[in-house]
Length: 173
Image (cartoon, rainbow, N blue to C red; front, side, top):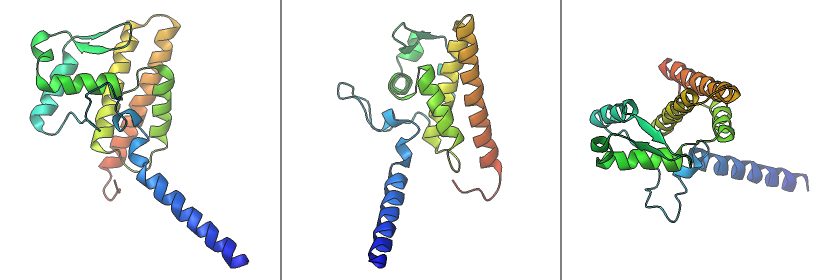
């Protein structure tokens, strides 16, 4: 009987390790792995796959953004908004990154407990969440500004921690 219990615990432990390892990609940004049925959003969209796309993302962020009352992000510059990559930017900003304070706090907590360094797509989405939070902080007033500023600080600290970890030699991803 003792061996059966030990074997059962061993199988359970291996199953838990396999399940949590297999789903670890979806932990930080679950919406990227579960697109809405009504959306034509690609599974796990990524904006930066080349240096040109990094520069284009920088232009999107420098362009004036508009946040509607229903929290939809759009680029005001019509020329930039008409680019094909702007559609991906729109998708990531509106369907993937968190935009409410509780969701951003949950992301910050997950980032602080995240082992290793972030994957490229998770880092990109965290930076976009940071940019969104900074934009919302600038638009807020009173105690709302303080709440958004605290969320901004915790995201910044999480990104800084990830950058410090990734700059150390010998740190596994």
